[in-house]
Image (cartoon, rainbow, N blue to C red; front, side, top):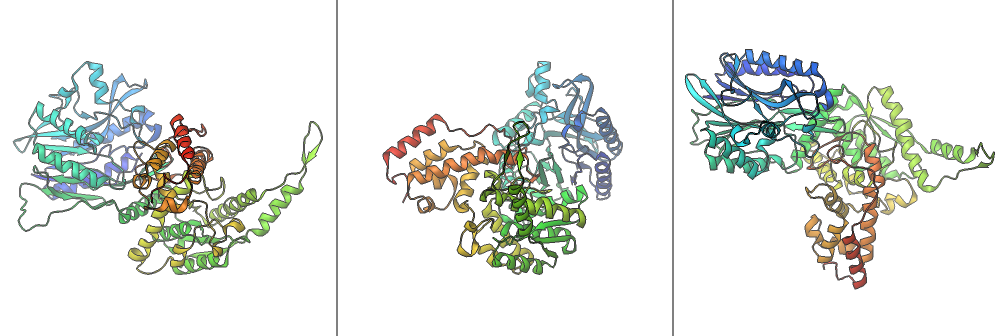
Length: 640
């Protein structure tokens, strides 16, 4: 039997376009002799649609497009994901009931209701973790079983078909039913096999890119498939989807495993692909075994970053971009990425120096713009900043009730904010409107964690493409782009070597080695511990590890680094508390107003990291640990 893996690019909210793509792939699969074609989860409607799921007319439309696919199944079996609607029942939200479903169409009709309540299969458990909240809209198989007072194990039934006069039993896993979890996958496969023999397991998915995800999934699938001895087809899609605050690139990497758990073939990442698996006729002798692409390194991050940004720009119709080019590494990397995506003729790079910007960074900005061949302009801001300060300090503030007047004094800190806001709100916003595009937010994840950005200033922009990358990843990516993409030093090495600095005051003079207050080689890893682990860490965890002398090992920073930065226990504790307060205080307030972020990591800011403005809190145990460490005195807690 020839099996086609239909790794398509899904366009969320456009069932018409998705159905056209499916029809084209079905024709191609039939031309190549395929008898079975498999498409991804929710491939007709898309997945992340917000509350579009509450529109009955949209649901009817998706069902109608699904009927067109069913009609094409007269001489090929088509497995596809769509929303299933039970118009006679209500969901948990009181609206018409919707299922995330997998359909099996053959001979112009649906199969599977001989041993199941519906002629389709239902996702077992809704995805309600990270940025997903499926239970807001969908009714799960677990809920259905509880409602009907049925043993859910009896509902894990394969779909029985007669294909080319031969019985075919297809086990079905939807999305996270085949999740990267040994126990869950094992339970689902075992329950299905207890109910009936299975010839092929099918896992249709809508799984976004995350660093290391495919590597982990391959290990688990290979192990489980080998244990049960049943071939396994995993079909994911490409494209992007978003929830308003996060842009998710989907990498595909659909794959097929034989009954021994060996990878037979797979689709390329970030590429629509129709892969024909001639399973029965394959010959292993002398044929190199395919390998799952390594998605743990900087190459995979570059692929996901450029792919996601490109398709987001395409989806919103943005063809030109304005970038504030400071001479620092973040704006330099963004300039390279957008130039590679849109072409140099569609990029305007703008340097906006104040009296605090050095000749060094101004020269580096020009050098990079020249290397890229983009449009470039210099808009000095000092005159406008001075005028703003003068206007504020010279304008009387009148209390209309008491008729008294006051004058406001602009502090040095506020003057820094005025510089950032003048650059973004006045210059970049105006230029982008005139140039015919949008302007970027150049913030990275380290800055976003602690709010090291100015509201309505350098935090503004239509997209924070680097917003899910730690500072050390930004440096790694800059080196990668020079070495592997351009093959030459487009980003000047001096930019990479220069101390990172906002250059907003004399205290941030790069020529004197003065830069940002964030010590990135350490704080990147500290901040990551606050955010990315499944069980997120707090100052209590950090201080306990510090006391035990294992903090560097636990968070992954360089051994010996903490002692070199913090000679005394009090220095370490003061630093920890300062950044925790920034993260949970002003940082949270700023993140709520931040632009959308391209999600690449296991936990991105946005709806992947839900938070409230509740201020900072330190646990009782933290207070005790702090007291114990400070009372003990000395530097005994710092490993040598």
